[in-house]
Image (cartoon, rainbow, N blue to C red; front, side):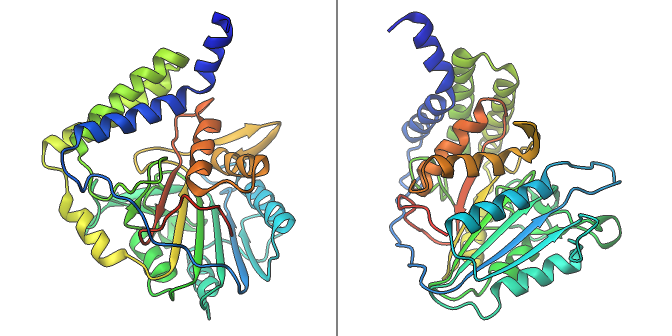
Length: 347
């Protein structure tokens, strides 16, 4: 193998190599058995109706106008209708020709529509592309002290939708055997559904974890990625995030918030969320192949078009690889119960 080819392969797979080493370091540093945990609960089979809610907000004429969110809705719709039978679909966009605008009231009503009369075997699919935000947490269930939010088109007058409300309206009380798959392409989205179980790319749960160990591992991983791909922006982002985790752990972290989320947000239904980035990150509104698009939505569709039979954790890994070539955001995977996500992705 020539040195130039080896260098090319190192750059191409730098994100994967860095993630794997980061995970190994975290496991070595953590001395508690609860730092990671195997997920062993099986997902139910989809045998009923498939119901879809797509939300895309470009915020035309407003500060922070986006360009790719309505395109994301069209692209996700085309993918779903090509590969699956869709029984019911509702689309909310702020396209001037749309009759269903994504106002705060309409989004919450659409959440209720999506889950209405859901029963075991049904598949509910949510895709949201738009702004996400964060506000100060007031009920002690957030480790970082902030609630994540969705930003409706009328947020200036009606307000944002806090993750507690998203969970209460969309997730809480869904019956066992229902599958809800949420694809949240927005900033600060890691915990926007307030799901208690976060997954690594190995399929293990990061239930409690040790923030000090994770911070050290994150900083080492950032250094390794920089050595391989020379991406200074990505390295600085990783170092900053690792530093925050390290300081959080040094100050005792917030295990009480974690435990409260597990006790109050666990689900009977099979609820799975792919999010565009970590709570501390932003998600890119990009131009790829001459089309405005959300980078995470593009990565998801690209990975599934390459191989629709990937398991959930391999899909997450491939999405991270695609985005690592140009973006610092890290897609995340979470669930409402301890689901074994080393099984094939399905909607």
